[in-house]
Length: 316
Image (cartoon, rainbow, N blue to C red; front, side):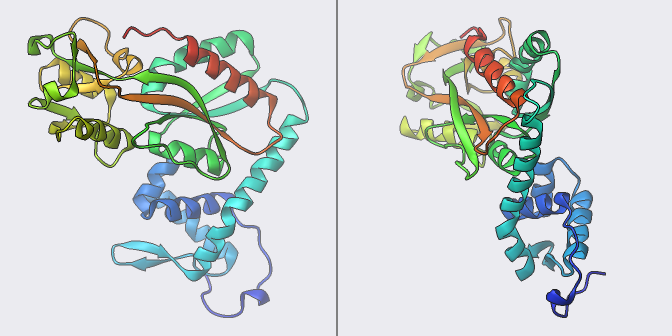
């Protein structure tokens, strides 16, 4: 049991576990153990163990029970304010040591959303293997909304995210956002819906929609575009996965907005694409830590990502 009373200054100093610090930061960011665990790729039980280990090392509890969940204690709040700096300092030290070799070698961790993992990752891995055989790329699927935080925490070296004008990706201290490619949305429907080649969003206000969840940046962007066109989209289904969305559209269960990269996940003739007269866009962005120096391997992966995103051909 971690001590909860007494003067912490009387306790011998102990090394704080980095996994516990990351769990504490994730809990502070997301508010619940379940969401924190999901953002880190762990179970809630694993995160609970990490926080317990942190409490033992610190000599006092960092969280306490509150209703059905937990909240940070005063000690947890105080530590959270400094945890980002501690994690960043560790990352800077590791990067400096690795950068000292000057070689394009080693493992680079890339956080990416599912659409890019399916559309771009295979070519990215192939180009890296050909040009930089000593660089190993490890891909981690993240939700678009979690990419910035994962880069800031150092969970990944680089992140591919999406930026929507109506629902911008968080700009977090310690990260740099580099725009890579602007994509324009079109409307996808089943061929049996018999829509024209070009239309306004308002022309399909009466149809059912396959919508992303409202709480996501993508969901906010789609709803915002529809509202700007003068209507509230009626959801037949709410799903976050692009492949599932396109499958439901192909079955004639609703219409959806999709970019060329998204549309590329379902080649074939069972979807019809209508060009929008409305301008609805998003940007594929690369998220990088703002710290320096940086490993040569991370630099070359960032360069290859930029080239692959720019040159990958997708049918509108």
